[in-house]
Structures are given as C-alpha cells and as structure tokens.
Length: 320
Image 1 (cartoon, rainbow, N blue to C red):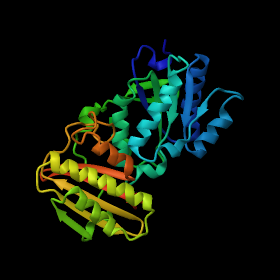
Image 2: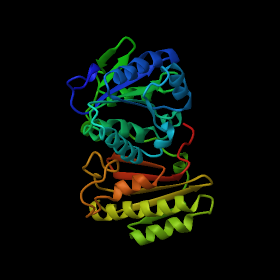
Image 3: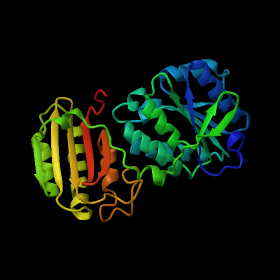
Image 4: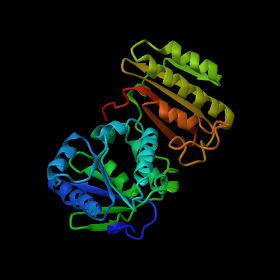
C-alpha cells in the first residue's frame, strides 16, 4: 500500500517543488525521503553536487537513500527516459510498494535547450505511469527563468511546499495536449546567417554526404557520425511521410553543427515522437527516436509552412 500524499494513487504521482533557498528545499525533501524509509519504501535522489551534499549532511547516519548520478543522466531527454525506466524497474525487483524520488535538472538545461526538457517533463507523466513512483522535481526560483517556471506548472499536476502541503497547479496540461502545442524553440544564432549547405529533396545518401563534407574536423568524429545517422533518419522520414518539398539546411560553427529538415506536412501524429520508440521499427517508426538518442539537442516546430526538425551536434547551449 502506498503512503503519504500518493496513498491510493495509481502510477506516477508527479509534483514540483519551487523553492527559494536551501532551507526550503530540505524542509520538503528530507521528510519526504525519511517518510518513505519509515514506510519501507525505496528512496532515491538525483541531485547535482551542491544539493546532494546538502542532503547527505542533513540525513541521519545510515539512512537508506540511493544517490543517483544526477546531472550525468540528463545528457538527452530520450536517453534520460530510457535510463530512468531501467532504474525504476530495478527498484521494483525487491517488491517495494512505492518509490520516492527527488530530482533536479542541471541549471544549464534551463537555457537554450529547455524546450526539449519541457517536453520531457510533460511526457514522463505518461511514461512513468508503469511504476508506483512519487517524484518531486525541484526547481530553484533564484535561477529558473519565469518562462521555465510557467512550463513547470503546466507539466506537473501538483506543487508541494513545506509543511506537507500538496496542491494542484491549476494549469496542468495533459501530455497529449501539451506536447501537441506549437511552442517555437529559440533559434540558434547560426540560423540568422546563411547556411553552408542547402538541399531540396535530397536522398538520405546525399544528405549524409553533405553533412560529412561540411565537417570541418573540429567536432569529435563520434559526434559527426551520430549527426550523419540522425540526419539520414530524419530526411528518410520526411521523404516517406512528409509533404514535399523537403529542404535541408546546415550551419557550421567551431563548436557545433546545426541541421534543419523541413517539409510542408503536419509532422508526426504521435505526441511522444522522439522521446519513445514508436511502432515495430518499420516504416520509419524508430527514426525520430534514434535521432533524439544521437544528437545533443533536437527541436520540433510546426507552423503554417509545415514541420521542421532541428538537429544539433556539439555545444547546443548558446547564450540566451
């Protein structure tokens, strides 16, 4: 039987903690974890170095809390989903009735790549419903921009505060609705310049050749290989499922390569496209998921002109 605020809830009980200082963070997370231990539940934390050390000092000696690698797991949203599902599955082997987990995104992810992590926060309301998970996502109000905090309230059903307070956000949007919204991602500054490559209706082979030819040797070879594979998958999907013409544009900088693939169609119907593997691998069902696994940042954008995917290899964290 589940305990605490999640008692009687099936699936993922997803809350956000919007805190102002270390004391407020501990006032929520410490009793949350200790309550789970007392009830015989699994307790885990996925914090960065500062908050992990803060919590270690506050916990009683010998407290059975699992400290996960924190920022290391947040390389890419699709990879984080895969890693956490494996972790949650391992926690279930012992037969726990509930998993309590407190986590935070690295501050760097609240900048230029936030659009992808907002999609992640929305999608996991569905993705983690297979587990009796009670999760608290901590956001520091001192560093999270207002638009990030607004997205947090739309992607989390509930807020928690000190004093065992748990209340609806009032503006929560179900994943199918939130993920279908058209929220333009921040344009990469490179996109304000002329692309070094521009192709119309390229074959996947031609697209691969163009990416390799544009490589200036500044990015690690593995990053270039991953981008080549991702571009090939996206172009293949656009040619097969989109509406022509398919346009590929590529920009290059010393620290990154950016590729957009645009077609006149509406884009994928699946709201979880890219975050979860779709279908059985035929008819391009895995293409977007592979691309999201391979690239440092992937954006989706729909507008009156069609659907655009942007793929970035290298440093996607440009100043905003």
